[in-house]
Image (cartoon, rainbow, N blue to C red; front, side, top):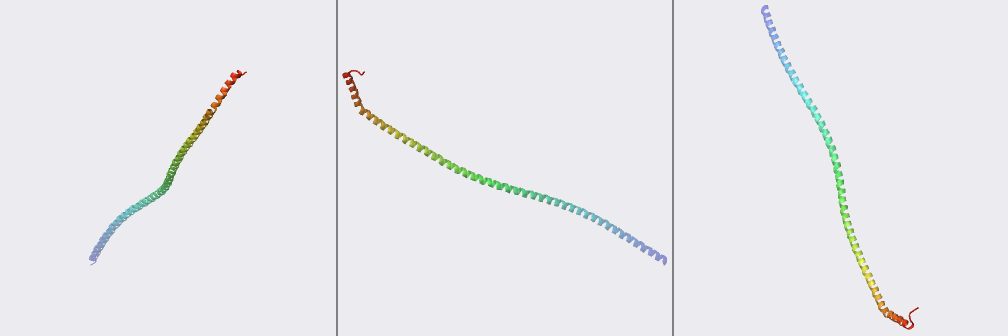
Length: 169
């Protein structure tokens, strides 16, 4: 009785101990698996944090690039505006140059017309003077022709007077 009871009790306790040991070992295996999963989760989390940090740095770098690009865009816009101003001024300059060219052409034409007019005046003036000199020459010639017989009579009268009264004293 008692011996069997003790053996049964001993066996039962042995079984219980074995089951407890088995259960303990299972718990330890589970604990190791949990530790492994935790380690994997930590590594995954570290990896994700690292990726997030890199992404944040990339985002900041991209934001810097965007800021730089916007500044360059503003600078280019300013340069474009300056170029447009220069282009307008250049266009105005060429228009003024064309206008001045036309004015110069007109001035040269007027100068040519003036020279022609001056030559015309000079020619007319010379013709007028020549005509006047010709008239004076004609008048002089007429006077000479008119005075010739008088001079001859005076000369012959002088000769007669010399013959009559002798040479002058």
